[in-house]
Structures are given as structure tokens and as C-alpha cells.
Image (cartoon, rainbow, N blue to C red; front, side, top):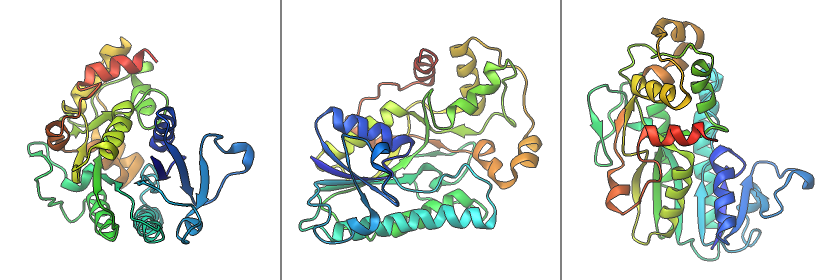
Length: 300
């Protein structure tokens, strides 16, 4: 297939391009600014959003994967929040424009979304049939609602909406910071430790995107998380086991709230989500349990 990827230079995007190229697909990376020739991948083509929205500029593509969006790992000031929301809305609109410029509609679009859309709860369990009902002050949930609303303009034969959890890997993303206290022998639960962490290993994240591209008939919402959910305390204990470190010093919630303000919700709130539709469609996880994933990361 010939596949256009937005966000192809990011954490998940880089790994996805590696996997697509390895299996013989042709990749076009859509980006705000095309990097200098010496910084470009030799195994991919590049185009700006503006070029992609012009008929004939990037040629026909069979599929589009939209992973673009400003990192949420920044201070949630008014300006920061605006960047987080606007980047996702613009990326959805840009993807719709890219598709409109194609001579023929792509067969499939995989659109990134966020698992936080369901809202926070320590007791509820959410699957793809759950109706998002976040509280009024749940910033991330409302970001995703706006993101998914903007993505309705994407017109393709098949659209898969991946609600992505916390993607973990030993070499990038959030996990190295999550594991750092344990490597320093000061790891422990955060807050009460009961908040759920919907996680997925990077390798399974990439494999689920490929599965979404390849599985005819698969469309709509798919929860992109591992089948074994874990609370913050359970996840921390699994890190401790994998890296042979103690899990013993709890970090009070107020420390995070003081240091990070509203952004502390990333670690102090969560949701218990299950990937029911991925399992029903036959997707097989390489790392279905938190211990399997973290043992693999510890060996990296």
C-alpha cells in the first residue's frame, strides 16, 4: 500500500514508519515543515500539509494514518491548552483536506483519538459501547470530544478511530520518566494508587494500527489499550518487579498538584478501559499483561 502518515516524525509515528517500510509499504510523511535533506529518512517521501491538500501533489494514497497533535506533556496554561486543542482540530481538518484532494478516496483512514474521552473513574469499566460523560472540568476528555467532532469531516470508505491509552516503551514516550523513581530506589504509588492506567506497549500499538489498516470491515471506535488494566499501584509494583527495585515510598497527591497544577491529572486520574472490539476482531496482543510488557522493556 501507499500510505500517508501525519505525525510520522513523532514517537508512535517513527515506529509505525519503520514497520510499514519493513513490510514493503510506500510511505509519505505529512509534516508542517519538511526537514532538511540530511535529516530526512531515505525510505520515505515528505510533503507539507499545504502540498498534501493540493490535487495531484502527493499522488494517490491507499490509506491515511493521522497521528498529529501537540504533546499534552506541557504546562496546561491557557495558551498551552489552546495549542493542544487547536493542533488536533487542525490535523483532523488537514486530513479531511488531504483526502478531498485525492483522485480517489483512500480505502481506509486510521484516526488517532484519546482514551481519556470516557472521563475519570476508579470504579466504572469502559468499552467502546460506553457513552463518554466526562465532568465539566475534565480537560483531556473535552479535548478528545472536540478532536473526534472535527474528525467527522474525514470522508473515506472506512474510518477507524483509535482511542489510544498510555503507550509504553523503554526508549521513548512517558515510560522512562515513570520508571526513573524506581531506578533511583524511591519508587512507590502516586496519590492513593487506585487510579487506573490504560496502557499499551509501543509494539502492540503499531501492530494494532497495521491491523486496522489491513482488516476489511473494521471501522469505528477501537480502544487502543492492553486487555489487562492496571491501577497506578499495580503498575508501579510491576515496574519494581521488572527492574528489581523496591516499591515503597508513596508520593502524596498534593506534591504533584503543587508541582504540575492541572496537568497532575495525567497521573492522579484515570479510567479502566477494555479493548473489547480489538479482541472480538481477532487482534492478538504480544504483550497482553503488564508484567509481560515491563519485563520486555527491562530487557531492552
